[in-house]
Image 1 (spheres, rainbow, N blue to C red):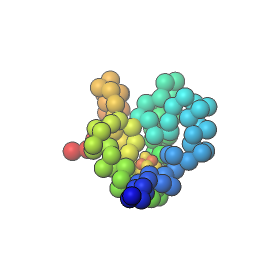
Image 2: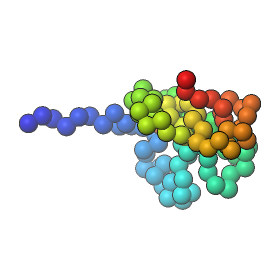
Image 3: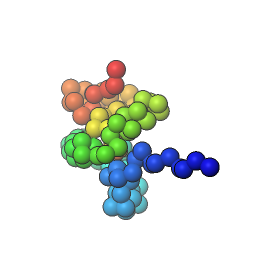
Image 4: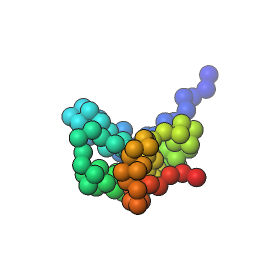
Amino acid sequence: MTAPKPDPFAGAPCRSPEHTAWIREHRASQWDYYIDGETKDQSIARRRRSVGICFSCPARQACREKQEQLDASGIWGGRVFPDKPEHLAEQSGDIYGEERAA
Ligand code: SF4
C-alpha cells in the first residue's frame, strides 16, 4: 500500500479557515476574477491584495500548473486571468485586468 500523496495546496492562504469564512460571508472567493456588486476600483484593489498574498504562498507553483491544466479564470499563482469578454473590455489598460497567460 502506498502512502497518500501530499496535498500540493497545503498551507495555501486561499484554503485557510479565514478565507472559507470570507467565502461564506461574501458568496465568492477573494481569488475570483469578478464578484457581483464590486465597483471597478474595489475589484482592482481586491485582486491586488490577492495577488500579493499569492506571492508568499507555498503552493504557488502547483497553483500555476493547475491553472494551465484547467484554463480557469481568477487569480492563480499571483497572476490574474479574466473570465468574461465584457470584463476584459472593462479592464482594458489595467494590468490587473488584462494580464493573461500566453
Ligand atoms: S498561489 Fe494559488 S493556492 Fe496560493 S494563495 Fe494564490 S491562488 Fe491560492
